[in-house]
Image (cartoon, rainbow, N blue to C red; front, side):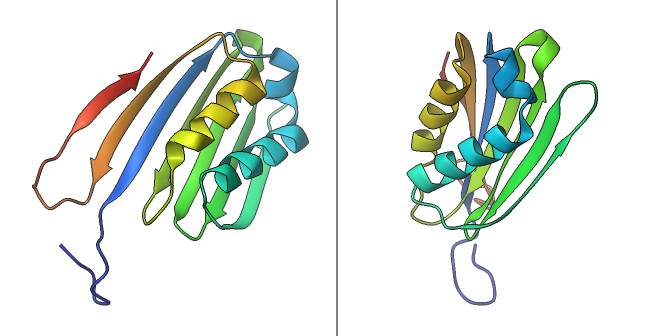
Length: 131
């Protein structure tokens, strides 16, 4: 399946759950912005813009808009938990971004799901790739 400019419309959507994270890191919106930018850049993505919001008393939601789609994160510092998603297309390696995020949050454990998107019924899959 292609769009009007004949570019492939499929992409990869990586969903990441991270447990046992550094609670201070999960509550720091500026540090999360920098970490998510670093994660995007490590994957080979082109960062266009970011928006992060802190929810008092704790928790942050943020998004990194990239030329190839987006990376987002939502944190629960009181639980040491974060969930993130990296939706990419083109020549991007989102697996590299996952590693940067794990290390930057000092996650004790994580689960990564990969969803292949926009394949028009061909080889659709949702799979756990790492625990």
